[in-house]
Length: 470
Image (cartoon, rainbow, N blue to C red; front, side, top):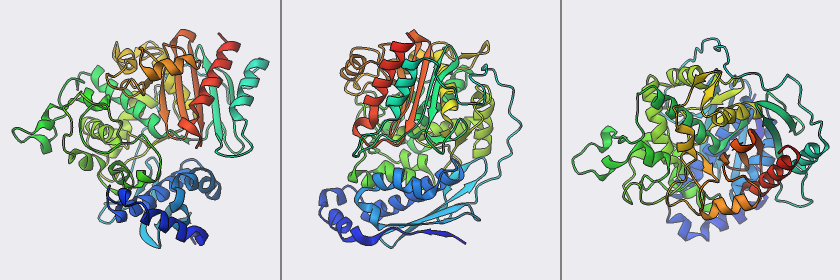
């Protein structure tokens, strides 16, 4: 029988008033779409947390979903069916959305008209090229200064918003030198990377470049843009990867009430074919002239990866494991897909903190593992090179970067992040920081709802780790 996780209705009127009092938000999109996307968000995230990560559903709602739902939280009801391995969420008494788990593919929304998810038959993992980074036990730091750094990373303020750190892994010279996990989490627990998934998409693109199957300067050129005179024909893979496509697909940077009305939220949490949604966008700015961070760009690249890998979810998953995950010994990883078989390469990969560290090690080693080049020569520098127009944010190509002399890079370097470092970054404080000058990878994961996704906590952790292990 499904386990009811009903929302408390005490703030129902307050939430309705909040929406009604925001006509500017309603003008950004359909209220029905916003409510449907809210249901899709809760059902998908709760399904993955329970059936991919093994987390307690009530704790995940309290710590991860309720804070991000804001005034909509009292309107949202949830039911979990462990036998069917599904979660259904409703918002405002309707707009029901169901997410279903399938082994190998994680969870996905099951919208009306969607075909059942295909069966996945992955071959046994290929031998890893990356040397073991640690034994099975948690690596307790021997250095008191490293221990203190971990203490600070997990300490909480008396009042919210909290940082809710779930895992920290510190690697130097390819070995874990310190790690810690919150209660109920461990070395094998898959954790949601959110937009760190964009950096994994970067790696899969790099593999295709190395194989000679794509070039980053080539136009994307889907059939929908093939009409003579369509200005979108000029959009290149590099434009998309650097968030400078010029396409009007909303933005994926902020996290407030308006997000429920943003086109990218509707795309990720209430559509069956995300890339098809993104390719309908008009061209707002000439390609390469304006930086706007949006998931739609990466979903177009994700479909390209799918098509190059074989055209469906099973083929894409086999490609990702054969060319990347297996070689890095990433054994606790789940890449999720939409109903069109496209990996949700903008936001939906779950992996253990150690697996995220292994991924960072690939970039620390310039894309070479065990003597084999996984990423093409120069790819790491390409990924960490600042994108013109992103100075206020410090973005490269699929990674955030502290290189160059932009405003954001200067601020982060002044706060303790080395000037050659770059990082994968995800909502709620997910980080894989790569520091070539110190031969180090630092992973921080959690559910932070404080300012700027607790990058201040990452900066302090980095300062203290580098002080202990220069």
